[in-house]
Image (cartoon, rainbow, N blue to C red; front, side, top):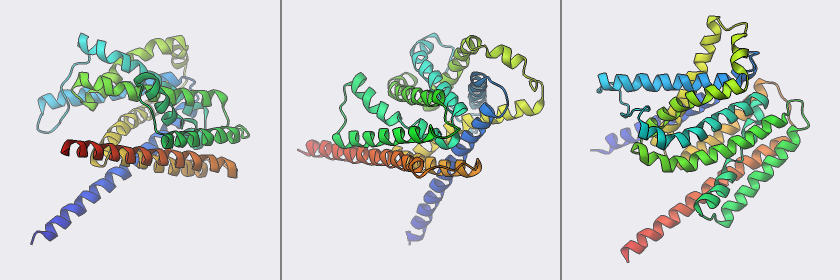
Amino acid sequence: MYQPLEKENLCTKYIRIAVVVAAYWVISILTVFVNKALLSGLKLDAPLFVTWFQVLTSSTICFTMSMLSKRYPRAVSFPEGNPFDRETFRKVLPLSILFTAMIATNNLCLKYVSVAFYYVGRSLTTVFNVLLTYALLGQKTSPKACLCCVMIVAGFWIGVDQESLTESFSLIGTVFGVLGSLSLSLYSIHTKRTLQHVNQEVWLLSYYNNVYSAVLFIPLMLINGEVQKVANYEHLLEGWFWGVMTIGGVCGFAIGFVTTLQIKVTSPLTHNISGTAKACAQTVIATSWYQETKSFLWWTSNVVVLLGSAFYTRVKQLEMDQTHREQMNSQKV
């Protein structure tokens, strides 16, 4: 009697997951292409200003949602918090500095390298995670997981070697990619520590990070001489310029939202698998969109990095399952 209802509920669940994963793919790929157009196509040499406007947009959206949740709590839900609280500022600021470094280096990498090479250029995040987890937390990684990291490094090395033979290669872009991977690893490690100060509220932490980052970018823009470049930009007062800048800001906020949503409706493991597959699709789309011809070894490097990342995710999942079973067995004894 209840079987049709169960099937219907299961079907609804699968449809919801499929919609969320599809939304993550579309928004994530779209965000990369939009950012590439903003950073390289506007003839405005001010990548930090573009990034600053994106975090400012995200801060504004979070602030608006926070205000609406207080006024219309039944319609809008957002965790309560004040980014201008002195104690909150003291505890979250170190993470916000890493957040600023992460998004700055990622966008600088994207400015100088092609979209097709972007994934390989930033592929060392997993490797840095293993190294920093051992250096900072003293946690060792299994030989199988380390072998996967060696595979990723090999794919990265082959990719850089092959990309260096093309006209689109940028050494400084590759360096920013490595720095982006390093800062992302540091950010991931310190996020776990900082979440306890915001009651494990991911959205609240994102709100604080964007607010503090919007302030931190101001001296960086001044040091880089971008304020004068923006002031002298010929299209500064044109509506289309601020329109595309706002689209980029909304995309930056949206990718954070759908990433969190995908993890919520699936799992961190499924999110990693989805992200790896998305990167593969993104690379194929980019080479087709920009009409780029790549060598066999170039494609091989992408496959090696993707497989290394996928294998690492699988190895870690199996290790966590084994640890969980051992803990359950010890509790029974």
